[in-house]
Length: 88
Image (tube, rainbow, N blue to C red; front, side, top):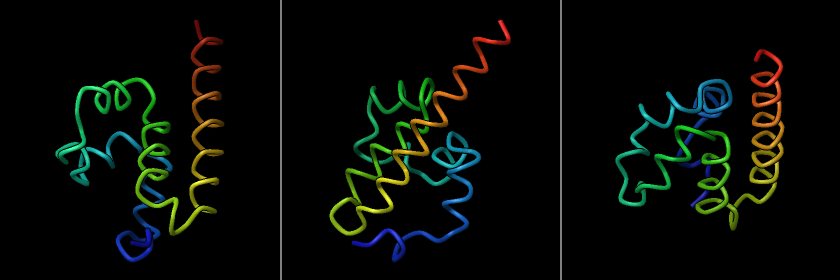
């Protein structure tokens, strides 16, 4: 299954800017695989949670997209946590 067959560019934009809200509204949090670790990831590292799910479901059909998602996730989490530390 291809990512683009299921989701569009608008979904990507919302995941980029609002990962927690998008995962909550899109219904990912109600799927059968959304257990304890999903909620821990959703609270503490939503970009990493998105990257893990992207790799899990779409790496075999679109590895380039997964590489971009991991770069975005690692850069975003690093920048977010670095900013939070500076504000303290």
